[in-house]
Length: 303
Image 1 (tube, rainbow, N blue to C red):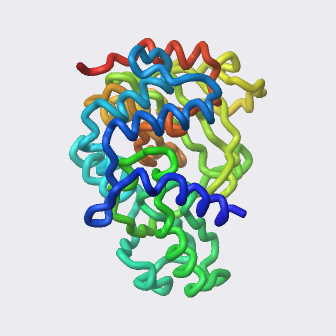
Image 2 (cartoon, one colour):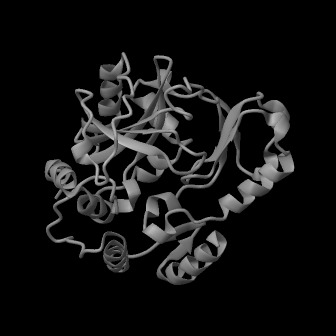
């Protein structure tokens, strides 16, 4: 079913784009039209591009009209490591075991028993390996061959993802106290002009898929009022070095009008996750409209 859906989407969206040197391009007139249609379909209301107001609308505006020259580099889960080092934060990078430019190059014998292996240019294209003796190398290679063919970003006009050359990276398996969460807790900082305002905490994530979500402010106050659907406070403990996490997120986000910085905190050690310039492609329906308006109001759009 998913394969059929992707085929239908590809037939619909592919004609709008040109491909040069393996990268996708489309002119802004076409992209404006696509974004208006996609926004209406997903958010169920017209997209205001002339006078954008909320977070979703300004994310799409930035995608279409702002300087996005570094977005592909910083959305690339491998290339972004260089930017983290530029910011003087090499100590928060996860251990990198291997980089493969072709799925056939994957060699499990050279990896530890536990690891995470993923594509650098997408979402959900990740394998969490608890015991490599229980996986088949041929099947792993075939899985990544299929994933590498998915033009992530094509069906959402996130063109910066389409300009990332796909590769595969293997990293250290992050292990955390399972009494709190069945997966490493993901702290997603919403940063505007280099200042963090909210952190979305994702826990109990299914590999490559759904996670439970709650929102805290920078004082670690649970903000049920920020969520569109009612959620109970899971009482996730505030990290002892939460202020340091805020500092890290703000340093990484400083050059940009808006970006979401994702971090982990494993036994008190801050680990970088990724940077996301277009959360939910600008169609987020997790936060209430009041919070989307609040965050949107804080974003100063460049001329």
